[in-house]
Length: 107
Image (tube, rainbow, N blue to C red; front, top):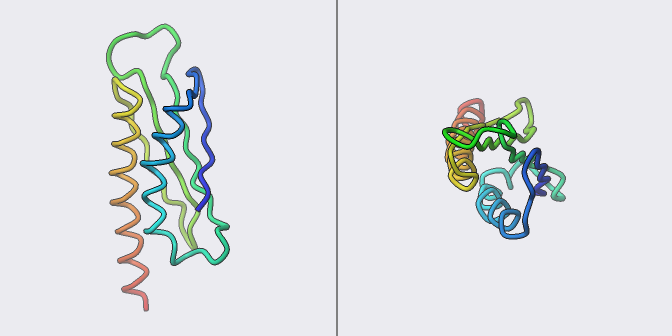
């Protein structure tokens, strides 16, 4: 699984990029059965919700991946970018497990 990271209104520092790759990359084991040559790409976006806001849910994270028959997607806003990424990872993991169970029940 490849990871494509996009940032908006926030500087994508090397530590933040590595954090995204570590956290989201761990989801690769859930989609490995649906890819043959690493052709699946997880699209990840990390952004600030508004340029002037300094309190509250300032950071936004989103992840999506196109699997056979379904686009699996997760998003969240939090006060910290890393917390938003963690939350998206958790939501995405739940969605991928649901997708896997649904595909298994069709067989």
